[in-house]
Image 1 (tube, rainbow, N blue to C red):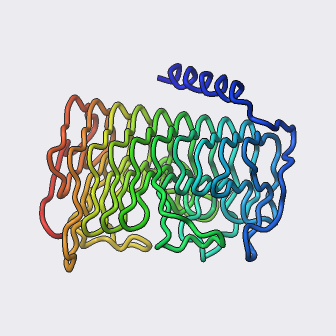
Image 2: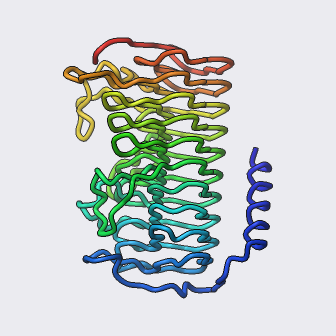
Length: 365
């Protein structure tokens, strides 16, 4: 599988040379300073067609690299980005972005509470882009890598307004994500009412949570790979989670969930992953406090698939046609947890030291 990743990357780099990315520098040459109107700043504010490489000490800045709306065809390659108070890299409402073979570590050191999602590496409303071969570790704010739609209806905490843009056709592969506090390792999320994430590939990554490593710099590292529809009428569709290794994820090792009325996960694939020692979500312990939620798995689990249908919702969230094939699931209380999810396929999964291979729940949690 990793040979396939390398081939795809080589083809991409060759195509980038052909189309002519227009700047190469041993140290970043882009502008530093404020982002829009306000107090948020970036060490590097990228411009279209730029290649960014080398050491980027973002100490004293909110972001290491900021790629703004409509700034396309940016390549961050063999960069070392560290010290940012918030995101190491943030890209918003654009396409053709590639973050490759870089070290994005020790960022989100002083997270701004006005930024609701503060991952080390975050794409918001970004499509047709790559996150390949990076090391993303020791973020102190909200986990590792996030790819989500953007929404004009949900505050982002940034002074540049987001549009309603889907996040489609992104390739997140061969990254190492560990020791990132207080958030999930890799998330693909339909963020905002009616927004969509579709046809994203999460492939051949290694994600490690606190069950198997020391806590992150300021607390537990959730780990976990997530595909989610978090808002009413949002849709996570036809995303593929393939050939990853997840160890010690605190919210299952891999999680597919729909959290709001009329939210929909459909046609997502969980194939050929190795999942060891997943987490225990139904606990009465901050910040979870989920002990009474029957949609959540009642024991440590490898794969959690659940539509979180709560009392008082005007309509249920929905999960349909999740295919779970050929995964290796080790050291779990429950191998695969399925709640309010329908028409899925569960084939050729291997269980070792698992108390219950498959368990389900249907109803209001």
